[in-house]
Length: 359
Image (cartoon, rainbow, N blue to C red):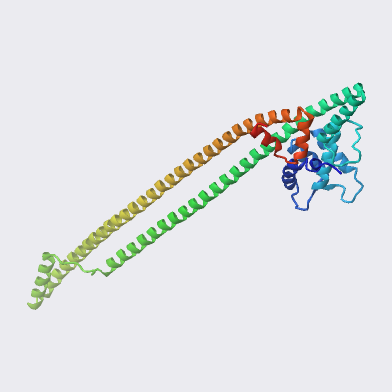
């Protein structure tokens, strides 16, 4: 039977490894390439040499799909490699696949006590020296676990902030797209209204009577023409008629020119008024667009600053937690009894709890 702490020793690492493993398992098959195991372990903060040793052990398996491995296989081989690193070359693990550095420390302490009772002080000294060596390594390991947990926590915060900023940008992009669509429709409606107004203006011009008022001189010539015709003086009447016709043509041409000029001026005034209205609308749209852009920049700066403050606060908190955890690790591992408590707790948060409570 193994101690309950032996089985749960790696629980504080498994969650982090699972999350990282999922990133490498892009196909979602539950397996990753053995060639990527060193990269996986490097991201978890392990030494490159450890990653290569785990990779080598995985390659030595005599199984199908030997070029890939499962999460459980990666964890088991990592445990074996790290225990071997702690115990030293040739260490006997007694066939216990769940042996941990803390288990070795406990056994060494028990062995030292037995040697002291038997008077075998040379062996007791060797056991103590080996115990101190393992204790120092375990302190490094425990600090690394705390660091990994804090790195993971910071990465989670950074990922959440990135996602938040992406959602913020997407929301603003949708808002600005809606604004541009609304602005475009406003411009198009105004242009349609202007076209309709101009068409109505032209229709009014077409409905105006084409005739023009004759001058007194022309009326006098027409009366004279009629009077001469009644008197039978046709030759003189014909000459007066020609004079009247010429004058009438001139007056009609003059009136047509005046009507054309008047119409042109009316069209110009209408066009100018329409252009002024369109320019005012475009200016208002541009002003509102600028206001929206400034609001977006301000909101973005506030979000960035808030996230910076959050990361700064988290960094300060983690620094304080690490100092407390470091003190707790030293205190716990300074005595075999304390180390045994860490083993028996079977709780990944035990070190952090001890640091917080000052135990």
